[in-house]
Length: 132
Length: 201
Ligand SMILES: Nc1nc2c(ncn2[C@@H]2O[C@H](COP(=O)(O)OP(=O)(O)O)[C@@H](O)[C@H]2O)c(=O)[nH]1
Ligand SMILES: [Mg+2]
Image (tube, rainbow over all chains, first blue to last red; front, side, top):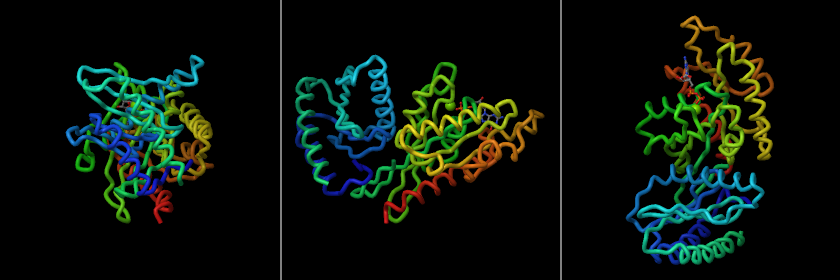
């Protein structure tokens, strides 16, 4: 898959999915990055101002590290990647071999509920992607 | 690989400073971070050990301004140089668009430079990239040491050891004084952007 250039139309469709399915539920910020640490798109509730470029670099590194650890212990992958804080939480989900979906959310949302929605979102993003 | 956002007209380019341990990769980024504050809109991220050695990478985003209406965002990374960290070095190389190979010009580091360059070659192959094709600049660092009477390899030896087959642009430099740090950066950015520009046409 060549994800190097994504069409404007595809990005807009993806943004709609992220807004409708995650931001509207109360997720603070959703970022799609590639494994090189590039940002594909960012959606937030306009309250959060994260340094998204540094965040993407660290997130890609973090994901790659955990993935390499999984391989070392003979796992295909660790399917759940989740960091829990006092006020905010971060959830990582693989879209495919190149792309990662990262959701940042607060106490109001349960992990189970988030995961359910993330699964749906990823399904829709894959469909948008495949249209190329 | 670079990521091009056609909607927001942003191009993200990944440049990695690679080289043996303690050759001066982090020092290059620190100099850039101090010198180009206006073009850098966030803090430099350094993942390091207590002993100040790079554990995973340093990261510094750098705004180049516009080319053909596109905002060019250069993401500078360093790799950890210590021999034992090859697994993490490889992770940092994922999706790389351009590389600065920083060699340590100190005489006693001669072998280490060669070994590190060979490993770069292998690591790129594991991503189906070629050291002969990817934009690459050589930096022969620590030339200031000659002034302190510390033996430094002659340029001809460094060129023969590291650049006789690659034939890429090279600079004598001193990351600590800043000599040719900007020149190295400008060169790798222009080589990388030229190779990416073809995609923007
Ligand atoms: N004399 C001299 N020392 C340098 C130069 N560049 C880096 N160093 C020193 O070499 C050591 C290792 O540098 P560092 O940037 O951490 O190396 P890295 O492992 O490649 O990131 C530090 O003590 C630096 O101060 C240089 O151009 N000249
Ligand atoms: Mg370092």
